[in-house]
Length: 317
Ligand SMILES: NC(=O)c1ccc[n+]([C@@H]2O[C@H](COP(=O)([O-])OP(=O)(O)OC[C@H]3O[C@@H](n4cnc5c(N)ncnc54)[C@H](O)[C@@H]3O)[C@@H](O)[C@H]2O)c1
Image 1: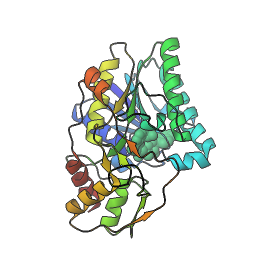
Image 2: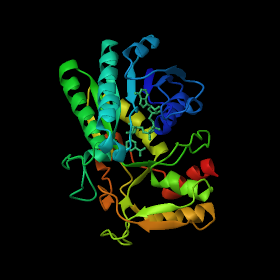
Image 3: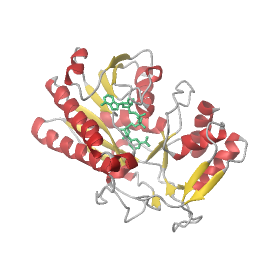
């Protein structure tokens, strides 16, 4: 099998690329390196530097492709509200260019990195896939738009697709081989690790007056190793002419203060933080129901918070 992994030099995609290469699959990574790193790409994979917005860049991809994993996107929710044009172009136009190219090459199977951001404010917890989709930021809207395009292309062009709605992706390669750190991370775990390693002075906790046990926001943190396994299972599932839209989470929530406490045990020092006011658009609690993934894919998260923190600290230490 030949897999085209678009955005495979990025944080999550590079973990899938390594796993596919470990299973002796043929992998082509297509990435413009806007936030990914060439060093992240497993040496057994072919690397093509290209941008989804330059259609001629696809000409560098030769031969038959069996499946496409589409990770490439801009992902900063706050930025998407200030520069929606950039997100329309990269995430929506880029996705359309990719699907049109791949369909013209006869590709049938597409696995797309969607997000819990498609739901907006949760009305229930845990959140299952039947929950309304009402994104509260433009980033989430771009993800929902691509899901909708995939639904139409499935009807009109006969493709199969899986849209995987990740919750908070965290952790690093359990074998310690992938070590590419994100530049200017916006997520809690890498920011904590930058504080622990002295790269950043302190950590800001956005609000401690939420309706949660300690007043800070609760999120569902899912290890990238578990995400990679889910991608492989999702591809196997859709290959039998099926589509799937599914949450990927652990069904367990941790508050920001829980994570700070647990991280300080792993890094062996107190972590300095300051509570500041709430950010706009942060729900108090976001926890996945992953029952559909269990039912359809036989998938369940295996890595725990300790593994998430240890594998991340191993990279930042
Ligand atoms: N990290 C999370 O917690 C999270 C949660 C939900 C969904 N997602 C989604 O998962 C996917 C991967 O996220 P990540 O955390 O690995 O991000 P990342 O920024 O590390 O990876 C994205 C990769 O895509 C590449 N890319 C971006 N635009 C491109 C373009 N126009 N042409 C070619 N390559 C391009 C980047 O260079 C990068 O290597 C994204 O689609 C993101 O929206 C991530």
